[in-house]
Length: 419
Image (cartoon, rainbow, N blue to C red; front, side, top):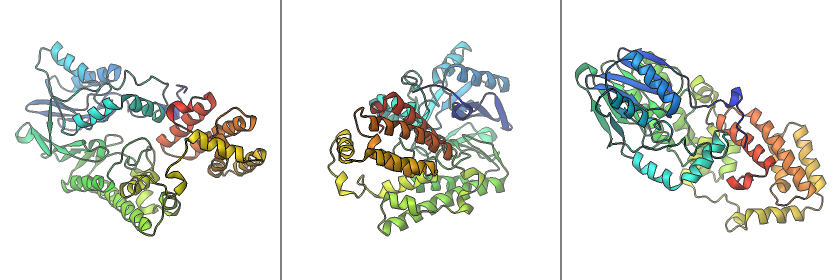
């Protein structure tokens, strides 16, 4: 894979530098996503230490422009690796100042997640390379995990009186996500549960995320009646009415998706048929905070479908398959008019029907070997994947199309199991 960077491929999770004061004693620190700082009578509480290196150093510098108080606690907004790779820098900062080490706090599910990530480390790194369009090995030293020193289940209060804050479990993108609530100022930091795009459910590389549980988390947040809500990504939502609108509208859209997918499954439709049939109402999915800039509503459909179905695609041929390369080779060998297949696929592409062209060209492009028609089919597939990348809004989809095209051209797709 190449590691070229365009405006469309900038590090998606790094949101800039500096700070923003949301309310007295409550601040955003920009790093990997938007971290958060609360000034309590126990000391500073920091949500997310950042990815380490220069980004975390900049976060610490920005914090010290806000307050000289000691850091009482570093808290993990959720267990995705990278958001808290910078913990050692914060601990070193406290030592340099002669202060006690901050408490390192996370939800009780984070250690279990970290154990799974360590078990599947090579897989996690390969998936991140594809999803974020980075060169092989890029994440080998960038996804450090630091175990929390303490965990909690449902709720944890830090500080007292008017300067207290509450951490609470907010299952959403992960089952270990938390949020922060300032009850006196009625300011919510939503963490991974609150974005300025459609909830990140059903991503192609990740385990399932519970759509209805995420909706329930947003509804619980709305019940707090926040005056302001800070997103992990995106602008602060200011005003009680605006916060209610975003939280309840998003929850309603997620619950609609669940009900609609279940309705179509009950009709007997398989996953591909559900995806072809479903239509996303503009009034639910056309608003600014539901734009598919990272995820996609079709991704959510797939996760809901998977939550109620097994792995079988309803084609009996796939129950006990041959090796993919053997099956693809046999299909290619059975096609006597390979030039006709290529011409048919090219005609679809010329008509702008890139996805149908990909379906047809796969009759040859996934086959092994270096026969001229096979090589030509792969070249065309790579070119059409780039065309598809221009058509989709989702950052993840664009990267998967582009990285797959590069690997097909370089002959390295087998390393990732890509066809």
